[in-house]
Length: 482
Image 1 (cartoon, rainbow, N blue to C red):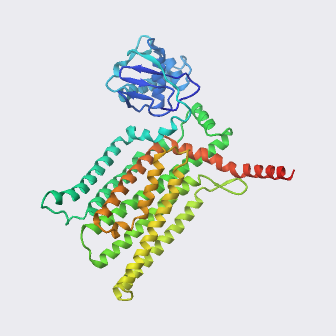
Image 2 (cartoon, one colour):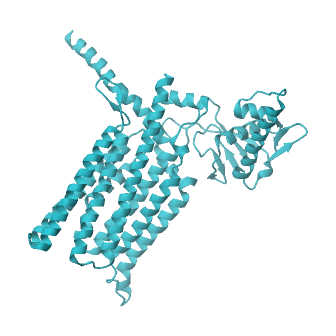
Image 3 (cartoon, rainbow, N blue to C red):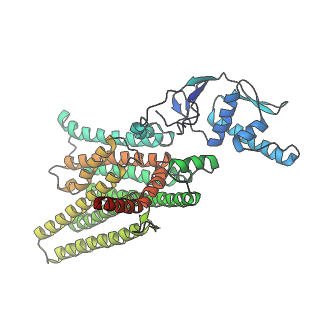
């Protein structure tokens, strides 16, 4: 189920082991042996032109006209040769990187300066999906995306390894005399989560390329996108696109901050559960763990702010700097994190100088950690609430699962305070699975262009809220007076 261009007849091409749906507007339009194969827009245009004319050859002039809108200029030999070289380069890339082992599908006919598609081509009708059919399956696309397949396998391997470790921790003592009590399962789970989140952090620097953060340059495509997003004024549309680009970049910076906080948090947890640092050392590690957990909460809240306020709107309906709220939240967040660190540090100092009893210190630490977990849970709940937006297109089950993660975030303190080490390990394992799922969803938002759609579409709605409400209210007031 894929979105189609309603202005074209619905059909798809079949040739060899390939299937191409030219009306499909997603990256799933070209399939080989049932698997998606990425194709660049220019190469798609050239391929469709060749398929449309099969079995007849297509001249270079026709291909240049289809791909770039060039009209023949036989009087300018230098320009003609330049265009021919560019066309040959694109055809070569199409044959090598897209068609793969079947590069002979396209032949160059030097005598007529044309290209001919050799493989037999058939056209098949495509059944039009009912309105909204694609929306229910949007997130499932990421499960088949070539860009994230290796990452999914990586996540799956480590999740499987961690589950196997938990099973072994339970079954080995029952099936043999060997005991695993000397190994803290929380250490194993924390180590695996540190590796996975650390790799996700590294991947985020090259997986989200610039192409996913920008709009197409083709005037015809841009006009259709402008219409789909509810704009008619080109100047407003240009400003909306610039705002959307900035919002995506800002979100990505906050997302990387979140991954950094998670990575450092689990590094601290690895150290805490790997060996004994002494009472003072463990207290210091507790302070640092709370610090990074709070930083995690601030990063989630910043991501929420970007989604919740793609544009700040004044009372007169005009827009202001969309980053102002994020800057304020960052300032207050840093202040709050600093206060937590100062209070915990003072408590640790008083503990070892005899100023506070062990029981008082324990209660203060417990209260601060509970507060940290609850703040993190609230921030995540706000974020998931915004992710539920139909403009972001999540499957119905996804927000439900992520709300379960809200509970896990609030149970941060239970990792240490649970009655058994296995209970704490299970919390870490559940958090790992949900983090991986959230990360894959964010990949989909970038790769599918859903973020760009969200920011430009919601921006126009936000900017119209106050003026539309004012008109509604004034007319309602007049009506009630009659």
